[in-house]
Length: 238
Image (cartoon, rainbow, N blue to C red; front, side):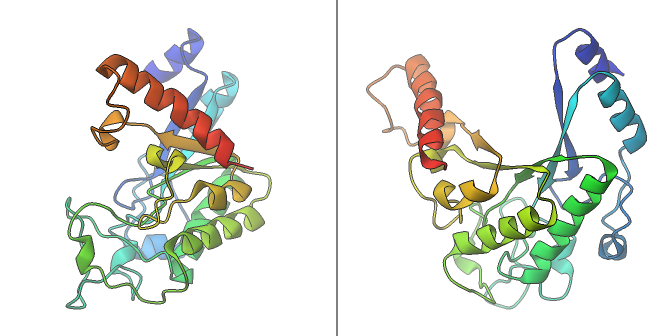
């Protein structure tokens, strides 16, 4: 009610809602068999209430879906990234990651998107749509590797576009992708662009090295990082 009161006052016109959270759990009453088997369905959201009240106020719901950081799916079969000893690899937060090269991993994510679209949630924002960066990443031992890392992400996006062609599909990417291809993370804007409707560049000035635009004072450095990054992202998209 507090959030929708802001919509009533005209403060907001859209909501980004976690439907698949940072650790892999689903926050809505999913009927996906594998999600139930994994114990990943938490039912935190009253979906009917959310959709009804958003529609009444013409508020857009954007479903945030965390992709490859997933403590639940990573424990299933061989879906998780492994370390050199064959165990599940964990990042600096203790979280597990799934292997984007494994088709069944992307199929699971696609099933989440399909289910949400059928429920009436037609705007999607993929987050953690990349390989991990924090922790002992040199210990990761990937299997089923087929080409550069970005290709596994593109294959996933192609599947999504084919299954839900009318949905609005977006991706949260490191802001630095507007300047350089992030090959280790698997994020290359030119490759993602044909399959996306929206790019959400995460432009944290702290993600940029101190030498980047260091000729400017802090205020203007931050401003031009935002401005030039958004301009650069537009130029890299189709």
